[in-house]
Image (cartoon, rainbow, N blue to C red; front, side, top):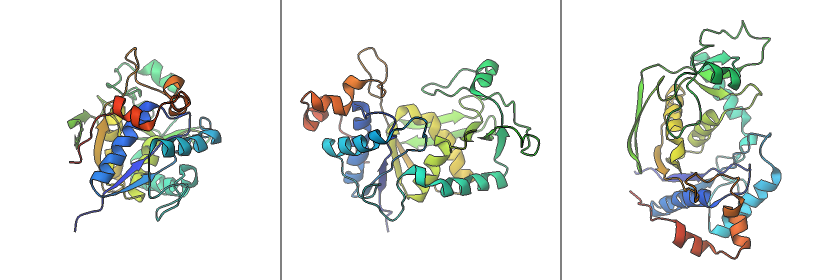
Length: 283
């Protein structure tokens, strides 16, 4: 019996959704529909320092206006809730403890400024995180128990992580060169994106992750987490990013291209899709 396709939309309420979000999310919805599957909406509201409640309501309203339909989510529930990440800390804590028990992670006291000062390796293409120089690799939790620290995943330098992306083709990233040891739990007690994403996609039984091509390197990191936690790795489909007139990728600071602003200007979802979107294969 074939596995039921389960895709997801995973917006973060840190600003208004823009046209680039809509294009990627539409690809996710089209692939779920083409495969006769289920679409899940997850509210990635972990970072309380950045998200605002007004953006949660706006996110749901803008998605509905654009024509998105989901079967499970924070507004309608489902068998794998909660669909708000802020209510899923017990899942993340359990995964963290499993990584600790397996000696996959270590405590790190380095600040971002420390890392920037020590780093000599360049960032990987389309990736904002510098290669960690390994400063704290030999730390023990006992030695720094009175210090503020994050938990960092230890990669095997030289290991190649490869996967077949359904849009971008064969991908290969080398640990220690394209990415280094990465944060799974922040110093302020918040699970990092890499860990939360893996835990939730596995718990919600997502079979294919559709997202932007800027996260290709993150996929290599997440594959290592899937393996360390003994979880099934889903398929991946990374969409090309939408750029503004100057060639920069869209961000939430591009208010003029937010769905809310475009709607206020009289644009319709149909017109935006016709002018900006491409057909996405179901294969």
